[in-house]
Amino acid sequence: MSVKKFVAYYRVSTRKQGASGLGLEAQRAAVEGYLNGGSWKIVAEFTEIESGRRSDRPALEEALAAARLHRAPLVVAKVDRLTRSVAFLSKLLEAGVDVRFSDLPSIEGPTGRFMLQQMASVAELEAGLISSRTKAALAASKKRLGGHRGIKLSRQSQEAGRAAQTQRAEQRARDLAPTLAQLNADGITSASAVARALTERGIPTARGRTKWTALQVLRVTSRAAA
Image (cartoon, rainbow, N blue to C red; front, top):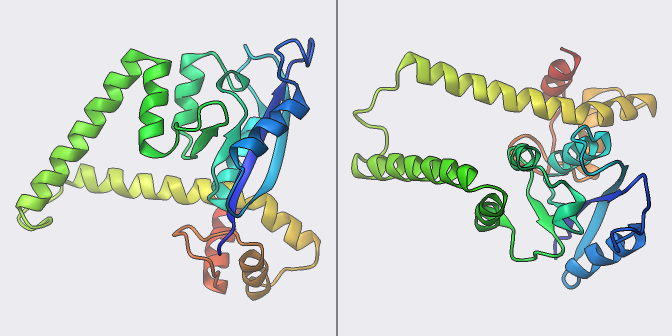
């Protein structure tokens, strides 16, 4: 049975950790309660000591990077442990990470994202619905036409697609950079050795594969250096 990986994020106030009734230990207990059952492990934990009104949270950025690196959901004890800001929550939803909340276990996956956006802002919900309807309409058109036959994408659309793909690859390289640096510091420098190390650590490739090749390492190393 495969082990499901998770990244945990906790936040405590700089004023009084227990003022909210949910201190650090209680947050850990809430996360473990949410993950109760099945085969799972927390591959990384991050604790933020910040005010809830601030949006510059370095530990959260590290947690998101770790979640993207391991292709693992980010688990938070309560919604208000992240933010009460609609704008910041919307930014979080666009970070490319599956965020789970222990106090709202039904919010996960596409349906969970929809519900979370609805709770955050009616305006954001409308924007999400427009995007969903557009994707559904494009999918329906593609099905009727038997794929992309007869459809010629404009140069602007092709360039936008390539730019988005490049951006995802660069983000992946940035997420991997600390791990690559640590491997180099440990004396693991050759592309083949790094590939073995990444495979052994269970870090998936950009396409979600479990086994790395030396060529993939060279490509991501080049992007990380750039």
